[in-house]
Image (cartoon, rainbow, N blue to C red; front, side, top):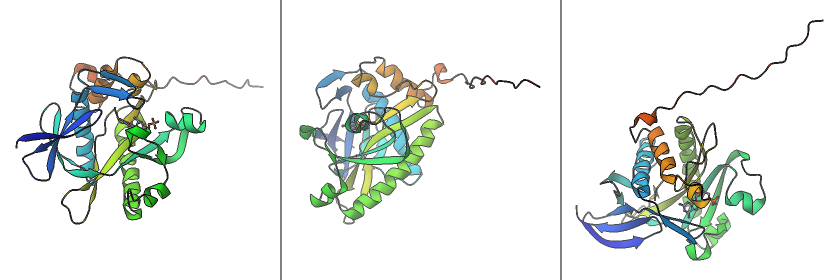
Length: 262
Ligand code: 5GP
């Protein structure tokens, strides 16, 4: 398999053509951007960690029946993926209110939502990825009713799976963004999960301390982004180092007031 010309360059990834028909190569860069490209930096090693973490998660998802574009990881920074036409919508799933939701609607940061909340944003950097409704999606034919119905179901399954996966390693999945694409050269116009799932696209908080283990470390100038991403990779069993072993924590027993015997 040979790498061909650059087909598309995004903020954190590049897509290259490849000699295999219907497949392309996805390259993970070290670039970090936030606030619609107003804040930019290069964080050495971020692309390598996202490549590994996303491979790990998408492999698990395909094992539980969520079809996605990943074929295999080729090297430290690249994956062979199926070529899709990306639907121009960012699908956001929220379990805990934070970020743009709290700013937009004045909801208290950290509010645990009764049910996962799905939001749709138009994938357009020039417009700042604005929030859109299903009616916008159907009116402007960005996707059909049938497609959104299918995607919504998948979003709930993906969320259920990821909440469990991260809970098992002491992390709260606060929210995440995913993208879907229509398979190229596929008469059935099948839709599959695409892009990446990594600490760049999820909000991940430590279960006990609520320490941020995601791109908010960059957005909010908290520092130690690589250390946080490494921590996620270690907990998921991708990086094998001694520090992988977390000491078990038990909740402190609550003080109990004893009633005086009369
Ligand atoms: P918010 O709308 O609160 O800024 O983001 C909600 C979730 O979607 C967060 O996990 C955030 O990382 C992810 N997200 C939303 N838009 C983008 C985007 O353009 N790029 C990336 N990497 N993640 C996004």
